[in-house]
Image (cartoon, rainbow, N blue to C red; front, top):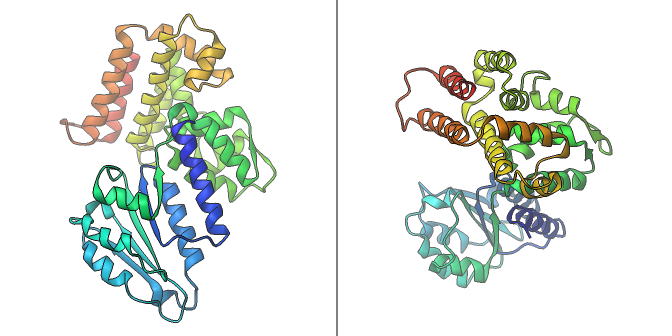
Length: 341
């Protein structure tokens, strides 16, 4: 099973357990897909805490400010006027002495629910504390959804919530979000809040509620670059640079990098059938001709230079390399480099 699909299935299984009031005494929530981690934490809080006694039994700490021994001391207390108390340790990746929690993990208090919230890089499974969490608690690894599986996982998510979606708006949503599952979920929440369940999500819904301009979006920019339509690409670029605060450079560059990486794979599979490429790369059928054209227009060394331009933009934005201009100028410089190839 694909890595991303596995995470989403495990996420659903944990959510179902919580809906059934099956609460474990220890949770380790870790990984890159922050949105799923946050949703699980929200659900745990909702199930464990009673509104009338929540202020007494909800204990929130942060790794930069609190030691593991402090967490142990609070976790060993008894709840006030309730069956359970909730102890949440956020930013646990900054804990200086995580091994101090192991003693508690081996002998947890039944009336305490401890959530060790560790976003980003996961705890190494061969470390003592990692082994202790795996042996004594519920561990959820929010792995980044594999790029090839994003469309499948998002489609399933939409069906699980009670909707359907057409191929083009699905592709637009994914490309606009840079293929990041957590970003896609966040954008879909806007759609779910405005479209009645049971309906099919269409292109106009994505444009209206996600806030994507119908004509000037990253999807259109990719297509213009693929076809080397310089005039159209410059029109779209002007729209982005004029509204750069609404179009963050990292998100735009991430979407373009994801796009051209797929184009590179299409190049390497030029003798394969469309069906084989669609299966391997996750490209929708209606976009195959565009990807084929892009693979011809950016063949060989040109593709290397495209990736170099996008990587250079990313490094400059992060301050790793010197950048003389602002964000708009940086993005414009990057697109002009690609158009010049």
